[in-house]
Length: 246
Image 1: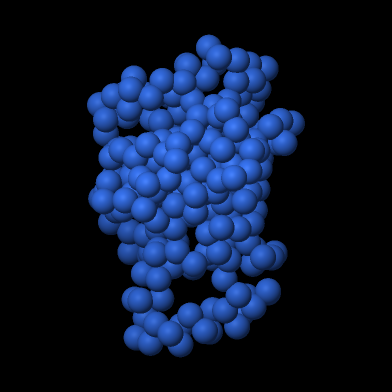
Image 2: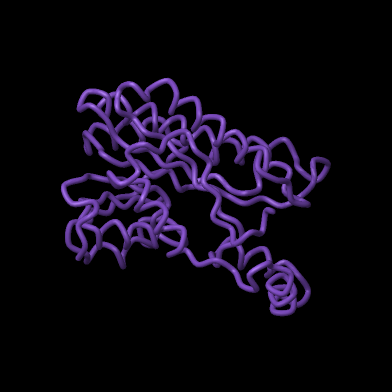
């Protein structure tokens, strides 16, 4: 076990799979006392056996559930808002309900979580907040990602606002902006094509580094942002995409 996060208490949303799960494993290895949460508690079973990890169900869209979690857990040193969805479609494809659902999970849930846990962070003199954004945001556009790109651009705006407002009080807030990462959401994207394997191969062939990123590569950046090594890093949208957005 490493020690870059020793003595820190962290919470991760959507820790059941993908980047959230990889980051939970990385945080635990670095010595954090971890609260691993997910709307589907069954997905957390693999983390429940790890030393220092407490698993619990959490629907980040539910005001009452978030408030109850904040009361139960108390003060955090690290909050990683990872929960989100990746809807497809242009603006005309995006029905009002899809738009609202995307903003609710991708942005408003982060507002809700930060608002619930920030007061205790301020009272203890600081903490690190990490928000899951995307290179598809204010960084760049992608076809058929209207609601997704808009929501992730809003995440970057929220991140910068929190960082500036609370920098003098020891709060750091940064956004992680991955490109294509090998997660269930990417599998869904390829799965919608007539030939999923051919679609994946075609995408990889067009990628500047010739491969898709791994969740553990994004998790490594999250460890840095959670640790004291990033004490002078705040308000940033850090891109990890293998030059895909250039």
